[in-house]
Length: 316
Image 1 (tube, rainbow, N blue to C red):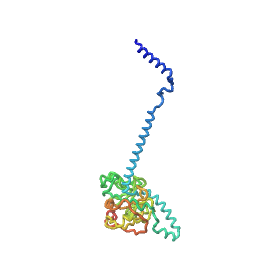
Image 2: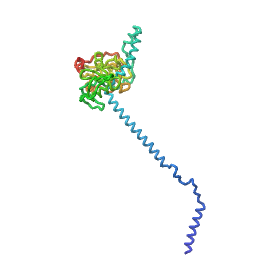
Image 3: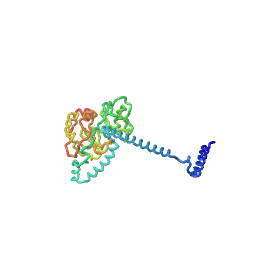
Image 4: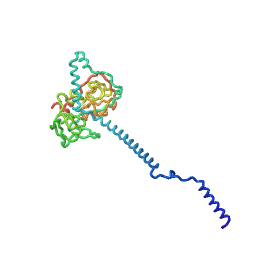
């Protein structure tokens, strides 16, 4: 072996010995513990939280879409439940009994029409329409599709006692159930009974066009409105309704009256009772979605014509 090679090998051996002498010992704590969770677990936790966040976002998006759908459905009206009416009737009877014991002066005050200022939001209130679905007529389903309420009479309108009022087509039953009221071809008008599966006949000698929020309050076509934050009986002036020509040929003066309540909306909204689906179709393009409303002691006009009475089967 050459001296240069020997010197080179000697240097390598001495260097290795020096490195071993000065190196740190390996302790057990420096070893990887396979039983301990690693950073991978934290990554999984983050991914899980991220997934939940995205699900929440999707839920919010679906809720927003549902709200838009509900706004469209609001145009299909107020629910006139007899069960609800009974509740209001009991309150009404208490008020009536207290009025009897009051003086003549107080009774005169109670007969005055309320002109109390209403909420400022009514300067730009939502304005929708509702009507009575009639057997055999065209109407609108929940999805906005127009259909004729006819077909095989496979569904039974039953009273609270279980007796049969009439047999109707399935789409007619569903529409009566959703609106809470309906008119049969023979002139019988029904309201929902003690449940959403039973009905009661309306006394048309007293309420020819249906019941409002109380059994003693009767709906009047193109006069009655439903509201949830205004006192029943309040007269209102709707600026955008003044001068509008109604489907029966008469011109509206803008004066309406709160006779009903709505189930498909909250406050600062009026649901205008237009009696017929065909009337809604004609007025929908004429009336804006937002109107200016004020409380006024305005004049209530009669917009019912002979043709309207004929449609409503009043003369039978």
